[in-house]
Image (cartoon, rainbow, N blue to C red):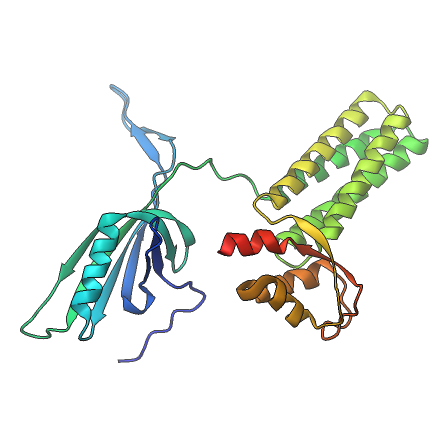
Length: 304
């Protein structure tokens, strides 16, 4: 039978709140997911059909079918059961969903001693735990809103002519640049410096419209554009390590620098540093070079 290959997936494991890590990826045969929307059906007296209302989304659930093989199956099975009974809550890594907080709802096992005494098949069920706010729109969605408000400001300012029209058009151009920059950053292709610079350009034009005493509706649309852009920038930055300026102490390669600062996260960090800085020769970065990097202390602490 051909060996299946699971691509673009993460290792399946579970770490209890007590710190007991159970590496289950090599034991997994298959898994099934359950994702419900939280829609509630309501029927009305003397009316055919029904109304539907979305409540809070129920927790995601999944069940993995696994197998234990070998002379030590008894000890491994006992360790698994003892660990989840002592502390069923922890963090699970789902092959597709990634890592999240969950509880083990139960384990079901079966054996066939007449066929194989060193094999235990079992299924383990997980349920996501904790309360979450509804998902927020992507930063680029807010950036699109900012661009729309900037377009309104530009269209309205055109009637005033002169410096007001020029500033309104400049605001629209800056908002378009902001949308491009933050969309690229979301996809891991852009530089955070471009996002910051384009937001600063929008802010400068909004200030200019105020200084020129532009009509109220022009300034209001400009303020809405700037507010939406700020929200987009904040959403992009939320949950990300703060950026700091790091001065390279001695000549080194980018790979060696990332390894010394980030350890096991070096590969991810290297790609991010290349995006946020214009490094012409990554194999030899001169001493004294100032780089914009994610705070290594925050990343290393989170990993530990």
